[in-house]
Amino acid sequence: MAKRIISTIGLWSVTIGVLYAFGIAGAVWIVAIVAVASQHELYTMFEKMGERPFRALGLILGLVMILASYYTNAIFSHGEMQGLDAGIIAVCIVIACIRIMRERDSSNRLETIVYTVFGLVYIPFMLNFEIRVMALPEDPKIGLMLGIWVVAVTKFCDVGALLVGMVIGRTKMAPHASPKKTWEGAVGGVIIAALVGAGLVLVFPNLFPPTLTPLIAALTAVPVASAGIVSDLIESIFKRRAEIKDSGKWIPGIGGAFDLADSLILGAPVAYFLFRAIFS
Image 1 (cartoon, rainbow, N blue to C red):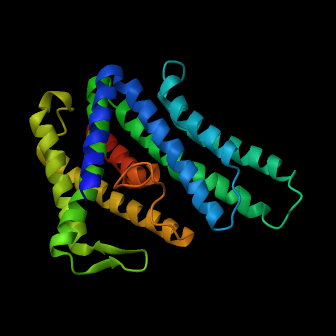
Image 2 (tube, rainbow, N blue to C red):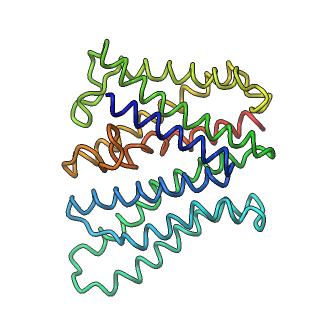
């Protein structure tokens, strides 16, 4: 637990420093690095399962998908940008299908295509919604705070669920996927996430859209945090199938990049669509 706390403080310190120095551009690169590192770890899990995804192809297109959403903003209209992600996925499928024809071993050609594309869709495509959240307002400072809000809500739900589960957790949520997770911990994590979401808006009212009141922020945090819990369980299923405890070992007390970003993978898309409804 001590290592996890120290790592969390260190990661938030570095993140805040990068955001202070580079603004949204820094946030985009943080998301891109975490996404590609997470995708790399997911492909490693697939390999431990006996599959052979096209790692280099998937990682290159994943990086392009994240960065293109930001750096093409001045060139493409908003509607065209939304189709860019689907276009990259289509390109990945085409290239993977062409590439697979060169494989002499035809026993798992289909699996190679499926696992390559899944890695691209599940991580870079889903995390790209964090970039879309930051692009919703015209004011980049407000967009940056919305991105921070999503990360804070999902990650504090993780921490809250862990702490509450350790104290009063009794009812197992998914014993076959993640034996340590409990319903009591999940409820506690969601409540803490709602308090954090409301608290950020309450403390920094000028850095959020006027329609996002503390009450609405708290209510919005509930489905976002809940999606994050499901996302965490999905990663646990991958790790159990690959027979590993953590996706990586480079973050003491936390694990790898996938362990760091897991709750954001489903939380960010939910936040994006809820924010679009609130701000429209």
